[in-house]
Amino acid sequence: MEKQKKRDIEKDLDIIFASALKEGVFPGAAVGFSIIDKYNVTSENYRFYGKTSTAEDATEVNRLTFFDLASLTKPLVTVLSLLTLIEKEVIRLGDNLGNLLDGYVVPKDKKGILLHQLMSHCSGLPAHETYYTKLLQLDPESRKESLIGMILEEPLQGKGVDYIYSDLGFILLGRIIEIHTGSELHDYFRNTVLTPLQLNDHFVFPAKEDGTGNTYAATEICPWTNRLLCGEVHDDNCRTMGGVAGHAGLFGTVVGTLKLSEYFCSLYRGTADYSLVSQKTIREVTRRRKGTNWSCGFDTPSKLYSSSGKYFGGRSIGHLGFTGTSFWCDLERGISIVLLTNRVCPTRKDERIKRYRPKIHDAIMKKILI
Image (tube, rainbow, N blue to C red):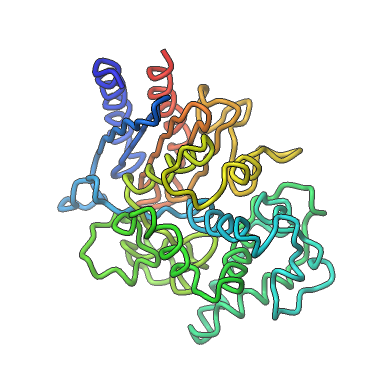
């Protein structure tokens, strides 16, 4: 990237983030953006703002700060893991839930749900349920199996074509990965994705296993323990499951998240040094599904008021995390932007990030595309 263009972007970002911090939109943030040029050379850029919490003695956010990535777990962990299994022909996008959940009694109304419907949030399953209130009364070792049973008993709210963004579907997908690999979800992700891509130092899943002394951005005050969560999963259902699930649980740095975003671009362009997934597969799963803005596990830019802003192209993918995290990739142009914040600290009630997120993306994209 040209030096002047980079300086102009940084200047614009500094103004936007100074305003956001003054308003108290979030205690801290990290933003990373990159361009892969026609020679497959990547230019990465990072900016850091604010602190890891609202406490006076909180640490300043830096490139080693771990954020609770929340629903970014869905595309980064669950979808990537599923794609490796699809590539190996262990499972297929057209497989049904009755076969995918081998060993479970799948009710008749759910047996015909297809893998690609679960991945694109068109399974008909509800969006979210507060299972943790029941799970807390059970032995920790039995919670995962109990939760799968609860999900399978939920009445469907759609007919396989209606879009309902569903945590429940991705919890099932996480379990499907475990069934077909014989490994715990976090172990399979670490061994199959992070290790070959040399990203182990940038992700922790689950955070409770971390013994490295990493710095974490705090999230919200837990409603059932009344203490500030820091290095513990914000999502209640995931936390009661031990911090590992297909819909949430991953912690990561802006550097690691940007590297994975770039990886999606490289796979799409057929230039990845190490291909977990073929170009044909990644192009198929990132194609927008009929009647929705979603592809198989990724959001795509909506025509109006997209969180990606105004400038991401038609073949772009992204995802948001409830804690204030996001990534967007323009697959054809090779541009990636990652925004990590802890906007739920100390409360989830502040949603002003919705106004700032597209402004941040536009400030970067507009200058890059000039």
